Length: 201
Picture 1 (cartoon, rainbow, N blue to C red):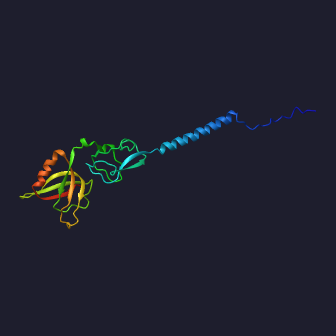
Picture 2: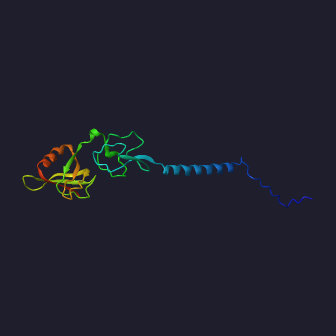
Picture 3: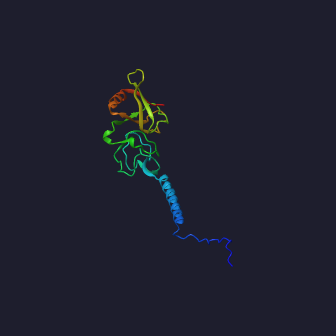
């Protein structure tokens, strides 16, 4: 005799591949993994840019020996190594060795309006004065009179130190001078009895 008062428990079945809940769960996991991968790839995106292989003074003409390539995570504004090589372009301001080269620091050679002038100092030049330093040039006329500043806030392109001068001067400092001021500086140097190159700050 059947007992109608006892409830019958339904047998549970394992979900199959066609179960909508299983399909939705798998899709959600796949979307989450894809999202994480996309975020990681975006965070690890690098771009090739040029860095200075050595100290680059204003007036330096870029070539393969002057630069190196680094892959870094940076925004726009630096010299893109993925574009055409900038060989023949000129550095318009000092860039230190190992620094990323700003795109605005490089101009076509015809747009660079400065020249390098060699200044032979008759007094010792400070050891702190090197490529990229800012200096003033002071001259004392050969016929006498007080010293005067012949060049102000000039950027040093290079320094040649005479190791045989025993600290008595004789170093040659190459400074970058705007083209319009080159004549005045050369005239002052030509009539000078003494020349001093002094670091500016």
